[in-house]
Image 1 (cartoon, each protein chain N blue to C red):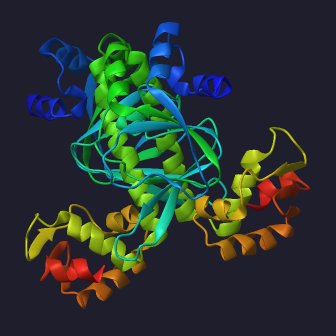
Image 2 (cartoon, rainbow over the protein chains, first blue to last red; image 1 turned 135 degrees about the vertical axis):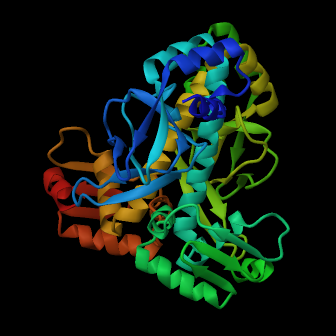
Length: 222
Length: 222
């Protein structure tokens, strides 16, 4: 548990706060482990908490009422906060959140965090910083969905994981391919076809291992 | 000009601030008129301001470097703030902003607004409230793009403009059809096909006037 609390302290919510305030935030936080596919909170439900992914993976989704189909709108990896948009505004969760692996989540009581933020504006600043990044990512996602083909979306995601300045690169996908497909707004079969299309640009995907023979060629190809 | 300043005071940035602070915000704000298609700020440029649409229309877009194509990620109508994500975080504009009509924009000096917000946390709260709404809208946009057909996107947009509880409705589109197409992530011809498809559900579009014969039927159809 101590190890976990140390992880929570890495959260951007704690950035720049005094030891005293950090202790107050700790006191309104609990860690809960969710199993794969378990719902952390449903869409539209009365909001009671803000969350931080200690380890594992969380999908934020929205469901179409008529068809029941759901779309990923964000994938939260360890170190990510979600629900931070509730600190100032809103009474309901605007997405659902579901564990996409065995996942430890730090749960901050919303009402208590709002009270704390009233006394310590730095918490508002920290939440605003996180929200600003999430808004920027959402804008990028909208434009990628609207402008890029499936291979381009995959290539850009891969390029984003290459160390800066690397001529070639090899890395392990941080999650299963079906999660990557959802993140990029693709059907699983469209993701497979994109992998095949990128083979010509020197990209090999074996299991979750991605090898890029020439980062420059891949960049030129997309 | 007085009339315009009164409009600016409607901005959510001013919500709950004292008359003294409002005067300070006024003092760091100027109104500028942009012609149709004029760039308000380019994407990626060093940020110097936060903006408020007094009247007219503003498109926020992102451009794909390789192809030069651009996608709308948000349409800002009168009463909307944009760039509020910069108050806490970020040094560059994450989108471009372009007038989509003759448009009066209130321009708040970013550095001065940041200083004001340091002294008056209510400005941070107000910006966070706006940003929270924008994030929620962006999530909704991502899921609509990923789940809904073109007619469904149009139908949902139309339903959102019907007065609550109305059995039938008629309204004027607040902007040209090509703007609506961009807002919904559709090519203009896909928008036209969607209008044609919705005629069967009792939706008539003549010029910019939309008539919905049965709101309930339209809701059931999408």
